[in-house]
Every structure is written in C-alpha cells, then in structure tokens.
Amino acid sequence: MSNDVDLQKKIFKSGSKTFFNSSLFFPAEVRKDVFRLYAFVRIADDYVDSIPQKVKEFNDFVRIYRESFKVGHSEDKVINDFIQLSFEKKFNPDWIEAFFKSMEMDIFKKKYSTLSETLDYIYGSAEVIGLFMARIMDLKEDSFYHARMLGRAFQYINFVRDIDEDKKLGRRYLPIENFGERVYDDPFADKLAFEEFILLNVKRYEVWDDMARKGFGYIPVRYRIPIMTAADMYRWTADKISKDPFTVLKKKLKPSKFRIISRVGFRVVLPK
Image 1: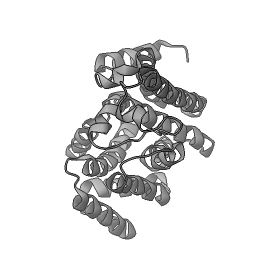
Image 2 (image 1 turned 90 degrees about the vertical axis):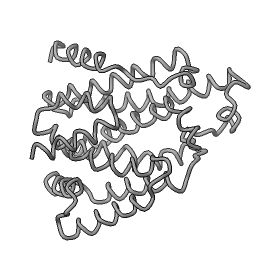
Image 3 (image 1 turned 120 degrees about the horizontal axis):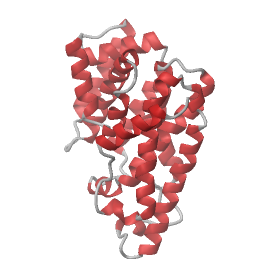
Image 4 (image 1 turned 135 degrees about the vertical axis):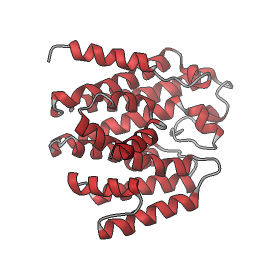
C-alpha cells in the first residue's frame, strides 16, 4: 500500500505545487484520498497537456475508466483506486464525465472568446474537483456551491498567471470580449489596455475567491488549514499580479514551499 501512495504522491506532486504542498497538512486518512483523486486527474490532464498531445493515450485512459467503472474495478492501479474512492465517497459519475469533457476540449478547442465559454471549460476542469474534495471531506451539500467557486477561482488565477505559457501552446483561456484579440496577441501595442485586461480578470478571480471563502465554515477545523493555506497562496499570486500586471509576461509566479509552510504555521496559531 505504501508503494501505491508513493506513486500517487509523485504523480500529484508533478502537477500543482501549491495545492500539493498545502495538502500535506491534511490528516493522513484525508491526505491518502486526496492523493488518489489527484493522481487520477493529473494523468488525464498530462496526456492533453503534453507536447505533442497524447490523444490516443488519453482516449484509452477514458475508455478503460468507463469499462472498469461498470464492473467496479480495474487492473490499472490509479484508475482502480479512483473508482474505489468514488464508491466510498459517493461521487456523482456526471462529475468525472464533465472532467473528461473539459480535457477533450483541450484537444479540439484552443481559444475561448467569451466568459461563458471559459466557465463551461472551468466547470469540468476545476469546479468538479472542488466537488470531489467536498465529498472527500464529507461536507454537507450546502457547501458544494462554495467548493465549486474555490475550484473556479484557483483555475482562473492560473489562467491569468499562465497567459504567456498558454499563448506559446496556442491556447487562450481568458475571454477577450470587449477587448479584442490584439490585447492578447500584442500586449505591448497598448500597455494600458493590457493592464486593464489583466486587472479585470484578477477582479473576477477575487469575486469568486470571496464567494468560496464564505463556505470555509462548512469545513471541519482539522481539514480547514490546508484549504485556507492554498487559498491564501493563490491570493498572494493575484496580489502580485495586481501590483504589476506585466509580471505575467516576465516569469511564472509561484509561492515557495517555505512561504506555504510559513502560512500553515500562521494558520495554526490563529484562534480557532
């Protein structure tokens, strides 16, 4: 079992450093389930994010999952662990299908022009992850809206932060309505417009993040610190971008492991 956990931990760690480092502070039983979840979604995401994209491998992964889900088990360890987790925590099967839909969109759709299009993608790529996490922590369904908003906020600020990286991959997730393609394709042509564009999208993130934080009270105290720490680190990223919108074209902003652990310590000493 320890080898399985080590494998899942390695897969998870290769993806989101911020949430991975924060998740280490969950109690052991929850941390194990978080690793099972993120190993599964990370593999699918990596297939569509690789250069060149591993379309066949992704389609095979989806097919094996669907066939295995019907019989309740799989020879593939990562898929099997996710299936067992889905039974244990009563995941809605529609959530994983929404996730697959968004991953498929990364294969066939490269650019998003309206906020509606982007949010349709984000539902499957991030909001359902929030729903999975809510189930893992056995939260009440009243918390689900806030869980979705947290996933949405995390994903959206990543889109802002990674605008230059995504551009090099031919992708555009941030909606350009009311701005036009030039603000994205040639940001230095009109610096004021680009700053306005970035700050607008940071503001959208902040609104969704505020909505998500209103749901933190649903989370048991023993689970709350890693979630709040991750949220604080994404807010740190947003604050850095707000101070200098052009920083998204200079470097990839990510909080250090030391900053994350320091924030955990700060959260621990806060009055409950």
